Length: 400
Image (tube, rainbow, N blue to C red):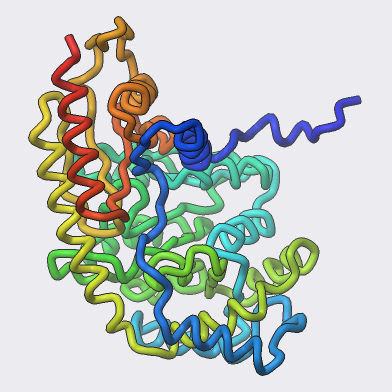
């Protein structure tokens, strides 16, 4: 009898975590590694948010809370959806979890039966397929290449939907590509989904406020209110509020789904940390003025990274509209050999070679379901990014 569950054979460790861990190991061994693999803002949590957490501690708000979150935070989330997205929810249609990742896991685990299909556009955030499989579902991948700016072609979506399709997952702005859906593009997707009344929509909006070039963000429940009962909108404070370690995510959707997710959460983590909830409350109720300098910095870094990558022979990178990642195509490097004679046959080879030769850590495109690319995060200083681009450029120049 095997001790470890057979279910774990379906999944693999998070590739981004693996790369980050390997980079840390090399650093600990004395090597100077530039890690562009982690999706974490390098800015501090806003002062008013930290102060709210300290106040909560001093006020004694350190006990268990409702499994689905404190009422004040849930109301703030209701207000956020109304004011920012023009979507009306009741407080019993909202759940707060231990990060957006737990929210997504809870939703899939509480709604999927064995054999249910989940449409996942590629490139995707690394955890979507494995979460689906752990919950007994079957990932169905919808390729979205750089020819269409990594976005869904509606007729391709229509062709992939089957009687077994339970969900489609949308992610805009996207991790890893930074692509964003316009209002019209969401309207076109909604038109397809209206024809398939059994398909539900899970939209991961965690990077909502991190957009560039005056891009106007829309979420699908906002532009297709008639589909609202089939939509679960996921968000959180990790990225925009620089609160990755505080672990607060949230979602709004149909009441029966939220109740089911609460039941799952009640048997796993129970409530999110009380202190983090009060901190998130301050974030949602407070000003987002702190975000302006962050966005200015991200925008400068985005331009630096994309321009730098596009100046390297064999690499081609689209300009992302949101998030803080670039997802360059490295097909021009395949077939080349390194100084040590290593043949670069795929994007995993490219990333491994970059770590060895350039001492720069990135994540291979295969981790996101679309090759041959790699993902770099520009959520680090301009100086570090300049050095990384120089190192990559030099390493590429040594290929034969």
